[in-house]
Amino acid sequence: MSEPQTETVEVNGFPCRVWRKGSGPKLGFLAGLGGLPRWTPFLDRLAERRSVIVPSLPGYPGALGHSVLDNHLDWLLAVRQLLAAAGLDGTDLAGSSVGAAFAAEMAAIWPGSVRRLALIAPFGLFDEKDPPTDPWAQRNDAVAALMCADAANWDALKEPPPGTNSPDWAIEQTRASEAAARAFWPLGNTRLEKRLPFITAPTLLIWGDADQIMPQSYAARFASAMKTKPKLTVIPGAGHLAELDKPNEVAATIVEWMN
Image (cartoon, rainbow, N blue to C red; front, side, top):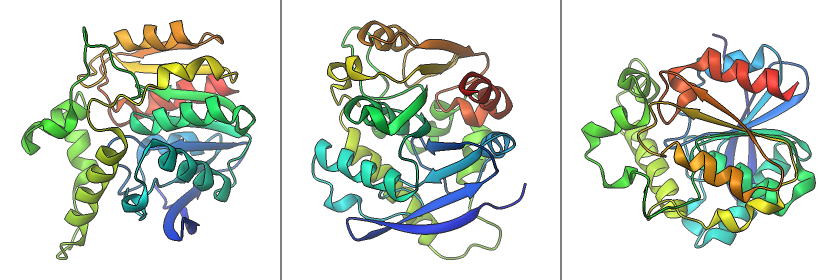
């Protein structure tokens, strides 16, 4: 697995990392809870068919600037700036978890900015009869099994690089959790449901059948709120971050549908 090209763009005066790899039509990806401290097999599978561009959200691994984002509007404007700076205006966009919620917001508020949309278990909605699991209320040793059907996949994403002695790695991972909480805590409810009817881009929903964070019932809630009805694909054996559990299957689903 070769390393991607890395560049830095500025959002609100803060640096944000952007990864690029592959060739073909552009496909942006916004990571889920925890961000991306390293390139993953899922991204490599996407890059076999597409020019994959992965901007890091403020506060996530490779980026700063979450501390100046005080409300949901601040976050949306920052994400909009980030995507434009990364050259993703008007292209296909995918996202996972909290990143999927932001991707949906971009398609709803700036319809011309997204051609086709793929959302993996997005945050943003709340049903008190079937609430999502609050990832920020969990013991640290329980998080891996909530993020992935196979906890080892989360552990592999978060494992420090060989020879790491600096506390910077742990600080970066904590900052990523704080950034997501700043945008989505409590309950992950941003009232996205009110804006879903404005999405005009063809939309694919992907859910892991073993998701312990976002109940699969939320796929129906997304579909009922959207005027352009999405296609739903359920991935067997995958958890909340389905792209970590089943990278080949999720990447193939996205690429085949977007083509």
